[in-house]
Image (cartoon, rainbow, N blue to C red; front, side, top):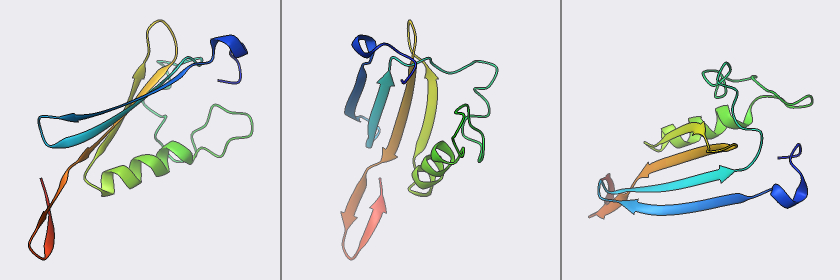
Length: 101
């Protein structure tokens, strides 16, 4: 959100438990958003839109979340900005082992 005036920088974090036994975290910002022409590449390793970025952050985040059985998706916010939604299955404890719900 470096490109946005200080008084317009907003970051919202929302959590919820949904009926499908999963936990969701939604992060929404008021930054420049996601360029629709590049939206298919934002989770690729070494893809960056920052002049000094390495392009690994979102790729690593998605890999960690998927290895926990979850999902990370991104979309544009209205009227501007981006929304990232993480969904992770709830883990139930069952006897000596953990079972994915």
